[in-house]
Image (cartoon, rainbow, N blue to C red; front, side, top):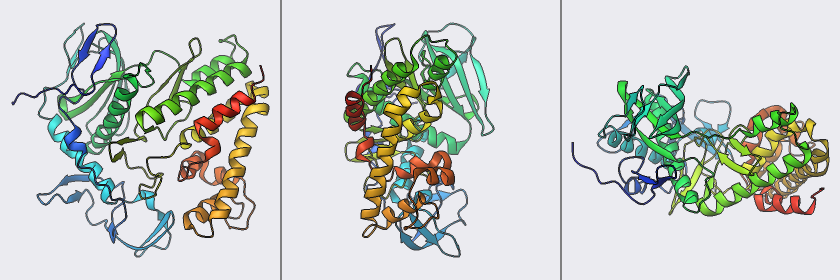
Length: 424
């Protein structure tokens, strides 16, 4: 096996051991991700993104798991496309284009390179060797899709979480997620703001199992924090505590957007962690996220996010929209915060989107279609309320709304609102 030089472009520092970890991939990935295609327009034929790409042939063409499931694109209209022999339109976001195919191309290239590296070793004893993990105290969580997660494992004396899978399609997803995770963490952590736990390594272990090892968070999720307030395990005024928490989350999102050019895109309250003692925020799960790297946009293709739209990778409001919407049901414990802060914020969001989409719908088919998502009868002249969109699309609603940036729901706008409406 040839020797590889580790890249020092984004070292991960362990404060406990005062040492620099090698590059988590074991090799420099910049020349690989440079292969990502800019163009994201749909071609005359396409495949669904759920039809995973098994490999690329000698002509660098994708070979799909279900090659016969190729669709002729008859029409593109706003956020929808109509396929040959299909009566219903489907979301464009559910279909491949040159950009999404190129993302899986780099994932395959990196997967092949990772297979050349030394294997990850599981141990049931204390070890300080790189890529040797102590699982003697770890607990295992199995899923149906050939994936296993290990919690409370230790790598070089640090508690870590291991995401593992033998599914090739999931391995490609894990690789794309790890790229985003690594780039975002290294950018923001260089500034001393540890909003994202660092990746220790990504590599293959026994049984062709891909393993992603990252630092395990030691603080509770926002979901658990809210439960602590409800059960009085956290003895604080819920109205004030939630105000401070929301402000801290918005500050963190703003800094990540500016410093890391990063959008989480699945920022619900169980993916955000909060230490109320120090107003500390951290984020997990980046398999829906997007990051801008030089002139590229890197994401895991997802059926709720259209990569062909002009704002792809630049949305500044979707994280706050998703976070606040998922926060809403827990606010019975904080009636003052709900009345003075939350309800006015969400009403402002609804009003802005109604006006913007209505005005733009004359010249923008996507705006007209997204407006209709939130009308009672699904028609342009129907009554517009977010509750109708939520009823039809449930927790997917604000993801669809992420097609546009809503200025009133950017972290800057919410922080200004919080400062103006502070009630204590």
